[in-house]
Picture 1 (tube, rainbow, N blue to C red):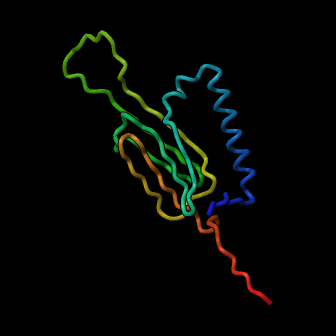
Picture 2 (picture 1 turned 135 degrees about the vertical axis):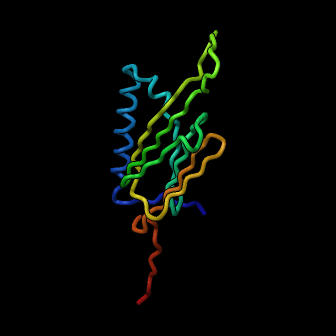
Length: 145
C-alpha cells in the first residue's frame, strides 16, 4: 500500500521556505560566489514516519573535525580539515589539497523531539532527528452511533 505524504497546516510555508532558500542560493551562485558554494557539503533531507534524516557528503573530513548544532528547527553543520603537517620543506610542483572548512545551515520542517543521532561512515554524515510527538501522524478511531 502506497503511503501518502503527510500534509500539515504548515506544509505550504515549508514549500515557500524551500523556494526562498533556493532563490537566494541561485542568486549568490550567479554573482560569483560559486567557489564558496562548492565547498559546502551536498545534503539530502527526507522524512520517515518518526524522524527527519539529513545526509551530508563530507569526504576528507574526520568525524572529530565536524560539529553539528541544532537550535529550534535550524541545523548547522561545520567542519574543518587540516592539510598534512609539513615536517620537511617541500617545493611543490602542483598542490590542490589544502586546509578547508565549511559551514552549512538549513531549516528543518519542524523542531526535534527526543535525542538526535549522528553517524559517520565513508565520508557521509547521517543525522537522524526524531519528530516531535505533535507532528507525528496519529490514527483516529471512528465509532458508529
